[in-house]
Length: 114
Length: 112
Image 1: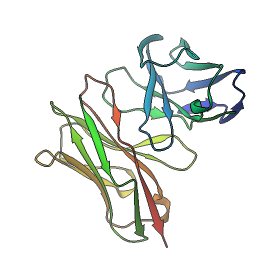
Image 2 (image 1 turned 90 degrees about the horizontal axis):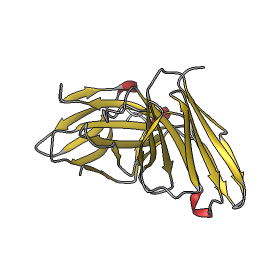
Image 3 (image 1 turned 30 degrees about the horizontal axis):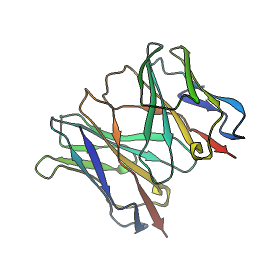
């Protein structure tokens, strides 16, 4: 496999469920990101990891819990979500966390919260 | 802080017509500018980038963009639209010291 792979592609969950989104990159990059994409809103950066360390958390509610066990894998654990959390969640990676803007995105996980 | 404004949430063109998607940026220091494309049910893909070298930047699929400092613009163009160009296009800016900031996107519709 090449690039950035996200699973599952689609997820429907109730507000009391616990689920996880997975992201894996095969590019040898050191930085990984979670973005939220909602209709009619700019992409929202949620979390940034550089060399497995979290370097940015943009005031994301604690019902979203990221995990980065190594530079190739990133998870987003979901718990007691709200309907407004329904969105496309995009994972991305870059060579380093240098803000040079060249990100490689996965295809996204479409989340629906009932 | 830097920002980008994309004029027009939707742009419609006929196949073979010129594509022009507008992006204006705001930055207190020289910016790095990007265009990303998102095809239906996919993630974003880098189309082209400006990083202070040539002001006319060529990207994939025949797209190009010109950095105009005097107009604080970085508009995306393609001489002749193809049906496969139908997608959402995002302009983005960073200074290299702050996080990448995306615009709200412009959906390009191409009719036969």
